[in-house]
Image (cartoon, rainbow, N blue to C red):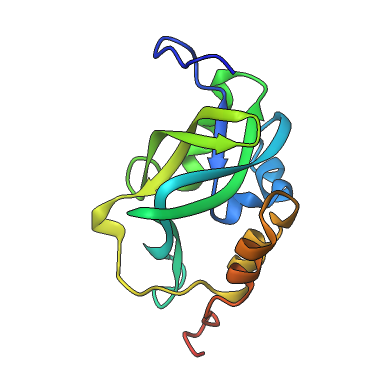
Amino acid sequence: MREFDNRDPVIHYFAFGSNMNPARVRERGLRFDRIVGGRLPGYRLLFDKSANEHPDSGHANIGWAPGDVVEGVLYRLVDVEQILLMDPFEQTPINYSREVVQVTTDEGMVVAWTYVANPARRRPHGRPERAYLAHLLAGRPWLSADYHARLAQWPVVDPEGHD
C-alpha cells in the first residue's frame, strides 16, 4: 500500500460503535463497496459518551491508551461525500467530532474518518444498553474472536438504568 498524501481524499470510515453493524449504516444512507476489519492502535474502547435518550447509559467512544487497541469495521465509501451523511446521526459537531485516524488492516495502513465524543458530552464509567451493544456485536465477521468475546462480556444496562 502506498503512503498517504495529505492531499488525498479520505474515502474510508472506521466504525467502532453501533455503526459496526452494516445494516445500520445502510439504513443511515451511507453507500460503501467494501468492508474489512480494522484496528486502531493506541486507543481503548469506552462507553463514556452520554446517551441523550437514556442518560444512565453510554455510547461508544475511544480514548488514548498506549499499548491498547480498538477493533472495528472499516467501510470504503463509494465517494468522498458519503461521510457527510453520517454527521447528522453522530450530531457532529455537538456530540461527536469527525477525526482522521490511521487504521491498521491486514493489507496495511488506511487513513479513515472516525467519530470521537466531545469532552462536554462525556461521562465516566458509562455502560451500553443491551440493544446498543448488539449493534457492536454485529461486527463479528470483521473482529478478532478475542475482541468479540470481550465485547460480548461487557456490562450493560437496560433502558431504565437497571443492571
